[in-house]
Every structure is written in structure tokens, then in C-alpha cells.
Amino acid sequence: MWLISTALAGALAGLSPAELGDVAGGGVVSSRDAEGGFRAWFLVPAPTVAVYSVLADHASMSLWLPRLERSEVLIPSAPCADVAFRVPTPIGDVEYRLSRCADGRRVWWNLLDGPQFEALRGAYELEAHASGTVVQYWSVVVGKVPVPEWAQAEAGRIGVTGLVDGLRAEVARREQAASPGLK
Image (cartoon, rainbow, N blue to C red; front, side, top):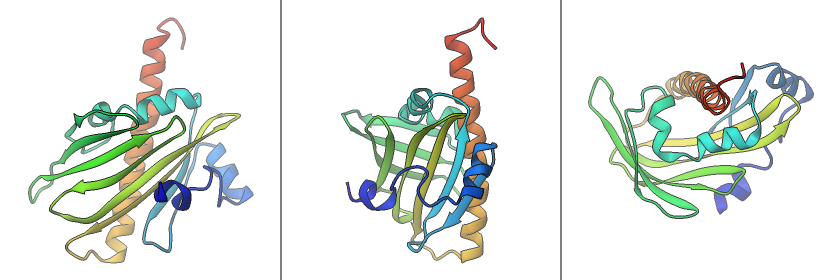
């Protein structure tokens, strides 16, 4: 619970009025925090329950998250599940296991094991907005091999772009599948 109480304090917390306007307009606002974590706020034009259903579906993440080859629930339980992931890279596959938890408004995770990482934790927090759902994403990744700050920032930017596009597309796909007559 430490992650929930200290890392996220409401999906809109920490945004200036101008940044909130950017998010409401479909933009992505991102920053680094004192822990070395990466934060991003973005809008998904869908109800919170629709966004949550995608984020809490641990087994389907590889369908919409770029470069994620496998997301397999190894031990299902409530509110957390033990989930295995594989990301292919030019220098070999990165494999790790996370404990992913969900409580109806948040999804958070912590590293169980992964030889490339010292730490891997993060969360999504959702908040209803007039135009859909504001998502705050937070993640801290500490590798066993030091990575320069500029490379971490660039990886965060690229990763968030894929995450935002993939999540928006998957939510829209599921909503269309649930209501095929609507556009």
C-alpha cells in the first residue's frame, strides 16, 4: 500500500491549470520525480470503467502495449496477480514477474523477480473527467546496469507514447466490440 498512498494522490494532483487543459485536449503531460520515477497524465475519451477494464486485464496487456511480447497470469488472485512478462530486445529477451494489483480505480505493480532489475514499480490512477478518463501513470525502473539520465528520459517518453496510443486504441476497440452498431 505504500505505493498507493505516497506515489499517487489523485489522478489530477500536481497538474497546473494549463497542464490540465493540455490533458483535457488530448495531450500528454509528463515529468520526472524526485525518486527518479516517470509520470505522465493523459486523457482516454471513454468512461473510467472502460479504461479500468483494460488496465486491470493483466493477461491481455501484450495485445495493446507495444513491444510487450507476453503477459501471462501465473497465479491469479484478488486483488493481486503474479504476472510474467517478456519484452524482446536486440540484445536478448527481458523477462520479469510483477505482482499486479487492482482496486477499481487504480492498478499498481511491484517487481517479484527479474534479473535485469533492482526495482520496478508503478501505478495507474484513474479519475473521471467531462471528456472521458484522466489517467496518471507513474513508474520507477532501476536496472542493474546504470543508464544515463538522458537515456532514461528518452525511454520514458517513447514508452509513454506507445502506452497512451495502445491504451486509447484498445479501449476504443473494446467499446466498439461491445456496441457494434455505434461509431
